[in-house]
Each structure stands twice: as structure tokens, then as C-alpha cells.
Length: 314
Image 1 (tube, rainbow, N blue to C red):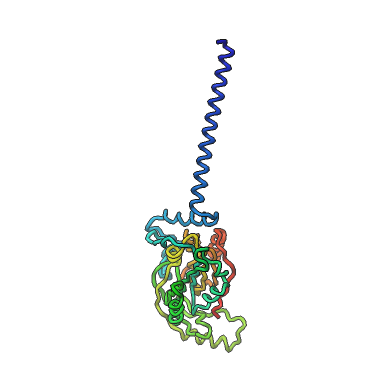
Image 2: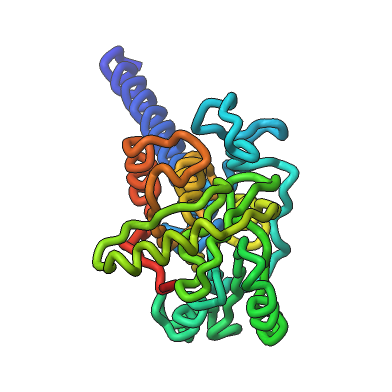
């Protein structure tokens, strides 16, 4: 065979081999892409829920003994330290998605009623086509004065309402002193977890009203109540498909909880967070204004809606 023909045949074979390798690599790339897409679709039907589920699944990587802290552990005023996640917590059983309303500082249920009336969003839009309008509410309140009222809401809630009365919302499980200001006319507005009376800002009040309120606050008394870890409640009671609303009116404890929540992977389960902010010196810890602002920014940048909020307690 002439040398020219032999070289032509050899060149053709090399080209065919290269083409075959290119086709093989392309097919492998398509298979990999298809597998990735199938995996993504199997995780969830929504990009947002896929991202949330991915973040929630990352919780499983946290070591059993690991706890998230946002401040100095030598701080002894706090009844316990930030526990953003513990692997001993148990997620709920498989079920259909629903709305979850977590009311921290529920008082007599005066912000649960607006939830039912659609002030936090139409309740009829909760659930799916299989369980339209489905929701569950957790009402957490430290003041024992409201025990009976909240228990009645739980008893008549048809299994949808869980009254967690004489319990203080916090960032860990423990117990704390809760100061009651003995002012039922204003729904005990000066009560707090730090065990001392507070003077809420007095703008718009007459001197007589100020003196009366101060006198009422000074006649208050302290009680000891257990604390409830918000992150644990969220992890054990919600699923990624739920629409989760958290309302927080907890008399200064938000300065401890919000930074802890911002550092917790469990925050991925929240859709809307309503925080009434109280004076910074009502907190048990030492969170600064800058740390609180950073925590809020972290939560909103993760996709959580945080509208301005003022409780209807008064």
C-alpha cells in the first residue's frame, strides 16, 4: 500500500477514535446532568424549599455534643446558654404540609386571634389540596395569670392549638425567674425574665399615669418558670414544607434568642419572623446593638421575612 494512502488511513482512524471519545464524554456528561436533575426534583418541587431542605439536612452533620454560642459562656445571668441544635432532637413523622404559628409571649391569646383572622396571611391558603386550611398553633406564655385562658384555647382548639403556659420562650431548656408587674389593666406589660421591675417608656402619659404605673410595677413579684428552646420546638414540630410564622414578644429575651437563632441551621424552617424589640437592658445577656442588627440581617438575607412589628397586647 502506498505510503500516502497508509498515512491517510491512519489519520482517519485517529480522527474516528477522537470522535468516539468525545461522544462518550458527552453521553457521560448528560447522564451525570440527568442524575443531578432527578435528584434535585426528588428532594422537592420548589427551589426555595430545596434550599431550605438542604440547610435543614445539614443539621444532621452537627456533632451530638455541639452547641452554638453567640456570647461569653462565663455569663452567669442567663439560665442556660444558646443551644442552636442538638442531634438528640427528634424530627416529626412524615405528614402533609400545613401552617405553623408559634406565638412567643402569647398573653391571653390576643395575637392568636389575629392569626385566625388572616392578619398574618390568609389561613385558608394553608395546607395543600388534600388538607386545605390546615394549621397548628403553639402558644407560649410565662405569666401564670394567663394559664386558664390559654388552656381553654388549647382545649377548644380541636388538637390544633397547643397551650404552653407558665413557660418562658428562650434559646435553651432550663428555668428562669419571671417578674410579674401586677398590672392587668395593661396585660402585665412590664413583666420580664430578668427578675426585676421595668419602666416602659412613658411617652404620651400624664404625670399621674406615670406615677400610678411605677407604683403598680414596684408591687409586682417574681415566679420561677421553665424555659423552652425555640430551636428545639421548630425542629421537632415543623417540616420543610410547612409555612412557619414565629411571633416574638418576650420582654427583652429577644436580645438573647435572635442572635442564637441566626447562628442555628434550624432558622431555615422559618418563613416569617415578627419581633417586638424591647429596651436592650431588659436582656439577660450582653448582646450589643451591632450584634442584634447583624443577626437580623443574617436572618433576612437567608430568606426570612421580618416585617416591623408591634404587639397588640396593650
